[in-house]
Image (cartoon, rainbow, N blue to C red):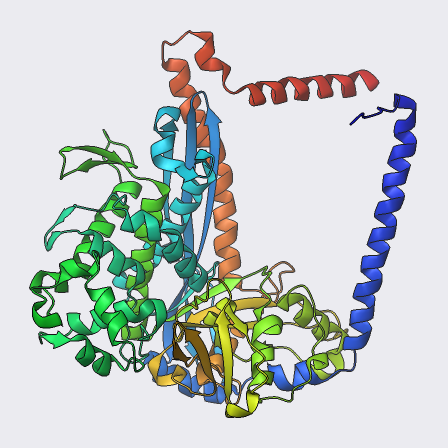
Length: 627
């Protein structure tokens, strides 16, 4: 193929052609969007069926006092920051979390007051500044890919920032028994799902650095790590559910709580597994991974070794030890380098190890939330999720919980775009604050099936598949909801953004059975009963909206309708970022200057960086010449 290069004089016409093409494409997209808004305007479906306007403040105060055990509780708002900066053959990482604590009061007259932090004692921080030379990069942030080892230094700072946030929350819960509301600037359910899936092969291959670590409760095994990765147990919520990929973990959870010697058939009956699942339980428990957990397997019966009952104590002890080392390293040590007790040498913690530590801390936090009724809220400012329109509403229609007319809901690229647009064009019928009904986060992994034999299903039932390889995430673990808090008194079309929160499920409020999903797994129809508050609202949903509303009233433009405590934590994180970006790099530069290395190659840095610096100098020189 011959390419005919055009002379420079045609560049202007080429640019004009591109601009005209861009203009026409943008015009078409805007016309399509405008047509969607016109069809949405006046349509009451979204507002009447899927949104919940306002809340009963007196009722919320009663629920709060019952749930929290007090009418006055403390809250904690946490946000993090990070950066990475190259220096010579080193990378400088900085990650940290910053938090403010305040008090929320539920008054007898129905008022809810969330007081802003007022003293230095209400401010918390935790951070770590880490230098890392290139020779250790493959051990810390290298990852095997299709083309070999892939390097992404951003994973280290992100992983440490996430770890610092959860470590701060865990420590705060232990220090303050009246801490009942925790606000995080991230989706907690998303962190669990992504991290546990991402670390599957890393853990099962024995690559995790916690493997073989000695603790006061014994040595950590690969099975310990696998249980820590997947086993989130709540008897009240009936999780893990005895189905699909959770079947072996449901069996293990039951066996860890009993000293009986049981067959696979007996275990299946005890945990409520579907008929025909005995063979899969037998296969799971006799696998190379789970098989090491038992005293014996005589005649196909299973009894857990006594030391296995301490698996969680081993994991939590090791996690706290390693996390404390990262944020409080010895003066002669390195935050990511630890002694490897089994071999007697030293090991470098990778970003996968750090993510595993975060996963264990999340589990520990959830255990505290369930035991002490702590409201954990993960708030997301900008979300591209679309499962409300793509999955949840179609399932409600296929299950005949709402009328079957897909044209009732206009399709937008994301849930937040639909809800924001509906709120503005239908402002006359929708007042703030409002929220959507709460629904299970497992819906994001579900794809509805419209069967021709729908008459065989009862009302409230729907057939589904897993969206990816027929795998559906754990149900009754978290619910989520979109919300909007503020509108202008003078112009109701002027409104704050639509945000998203997720919160843990709680047995006393979220064990509802409005919907029954049927998923074909192999030759068995598995039943999934998600947490869903469509037909009847959860008292915790209204309480959550009331709490968020009390924290979103500060008359600051960028915080109005968001969350003022998180806004403060974010501001503090930004200040810390600016301070750290200059002080940490300056400290390394000072050490470089003090070192007696004079070889130019060590100070040359990367070619890309050198070229960028030279080009920046040239551009600056040209600007000065023009002046």
